[in-house]
Length: 488
Ligand SMILES: [Zn+2]
Image (cartoon, rainbow, N blue to C red; front, side):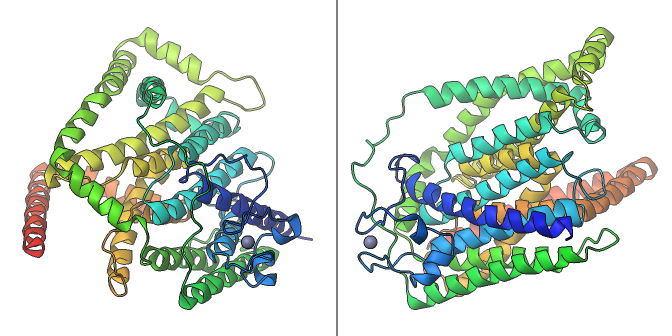
């Protein structure tokens, strides 16, 4: 049998089981419950522990027709949907990496050489799914979930024996600067997370179960579940006869992304308990939003200063450059370069986080209200650590377009105005994993055109840049006018 088929079947089943675990994460973490206690899943209504044969991903929900065996209370369609989507996501990741070859550096990946990359991408997509679902349900992203991905990205790239892909990014002065900034950021992060937070005491009892769903939502969720399983099966069927050449357009991956997009639109347009809370929180924080943004900018100064110093030192001092070269090329054999891999992942994480911070600070300073949550910044850092710096930037770019499309679509049937950005970011990053190569080609062509234009007619570029700045300022002014008008 074709080895791809076996691998995709195994990964699909693994994805279903991981999805089952994600449901636990999505339900327990925002509620402040421990993941491991109680160890067994329980019915949120009657508290009866659930037997293993009633806890099989998707299958048990279908057999029990979405009801608890003991109390007959309805069980949310979210459970099979998340499980099926995770199964599909795992199959797609394998399909992208090993069948159609979306890995950096070109060509399909191979086992066991690329197993670390597979592990990093699987961790990333599972975490994106959990973050998107948590963000939709409660407008919060649990930082711990994203930090798990960052740790996985660091580890997996350190043991990934593909130095020709890692070194062009890592063995540069910028790589050294970002590695130093990463160390400083880690210290700041540990210090910030260890500060005692004035949080509400953890609830004694479990939170209330998800609100009862309408029949339409249940049918929609069920259709989504079946569609995800169908797409995963289709991916496996495609792997029986994989394409001879690397194709960029893949109907299975495209269908999976459309499904994720629709699931986000539908889930996002449900009225949720947290809707009013988050609106109030943003209104309350509005007077201080600009001051908060400035304070955050100050907190970033040490990392930026250290990165700049290290970068300049390596550029200007040949002994420092030689020392960095030796460090980043250090190998324990077997084609490994742990320092290069570590630096590559740190570069990705910091590029993603920096892009998010810039967007957050600029938007907050311009609009005077929180525009881009810290949770979104952590998601971008996770995407960069696991996928590389280009995935983080491309994911952010694509997510803005996806969010706009989703926002327009959800206006049709939406009762609440708030939309968390996290789910769109998740869809954007997944699209980036798929579109990395074609997008990279397009950007390379654009970059080359710009470079030539800059050499031939620099005044043209300057005028175009000035026009873009003026147009952006005009768009911002127009947006503020419209908002003032709507508020009245
Ligand atoms: Zn029950």
